[in-house]
Image (cartoon, rainbow, N blue to C red; front, side):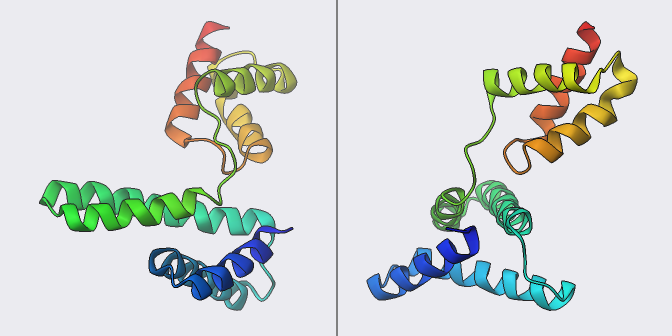
Length: 149
């Protein structure tokens, strides 16, 4: 089942179950997908849907940080609940050892020789593991691996 179809099915289930948090998040995602379709004059593909979900996750993370700094715990809890719903649609993240192993494999595939090949490795990482890693952590892992060569 495609991610778009899964979102539609879950939307209907959340509507029937009167799950307001899940329904609100899915409604926003459906709107973002429709806006994408209107803007690009084509239906969103799997990668586009993942990008939209990742963008929504990032927005929630930033909101949590700002609300926490302002002492608005009620809004922090709301944003965390929405973030949990969104993360349910993201693929298994690459973290820690899995990220280091993926970077090591890509270094061998790309034939990277030193720090000047960082762009090539990051591009390959983005193509192969789109939406599955934190950009900052991946960048640090690639820098460390290239420096060790």
